[in-house]
Image (tube, rainbow, N blue to C red; front, side, top):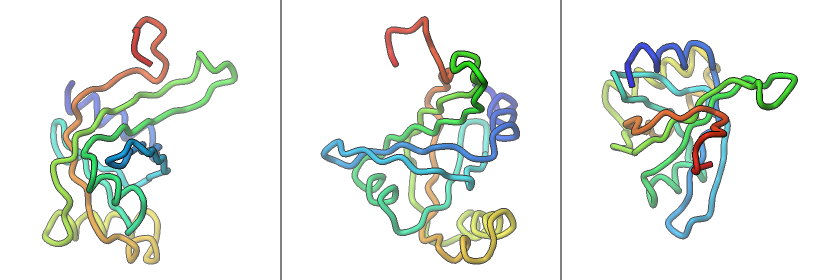
Length: 136
């Protein structure tokens, strides 16, 4: 996995669906437009005080799915990024920078809702549709 590959993914897909699960395996999926690349294999997401944040506090694994639907489902493009939470920031330069970026993209109200910034390591990139793998 290269930083240029991740940069290409983020440039092509401004928003994605983040899937998380709590400690008991109860799942949640939410749309996020705040994902930002901060290194060769690191991303950050701004989070409000919500189910996603609660889940990440219990279970550090997540999947961020980016997709562009085509007329035929199997022609759709996208990727699945498998993520490992490295930390939740509630202050500091990266937190402030992420909140400013969200304000620019989504407005002041969205920026004010951010209570934490999740920093993830991208552990794997898989295609949106993978017909050749035994894993879904």
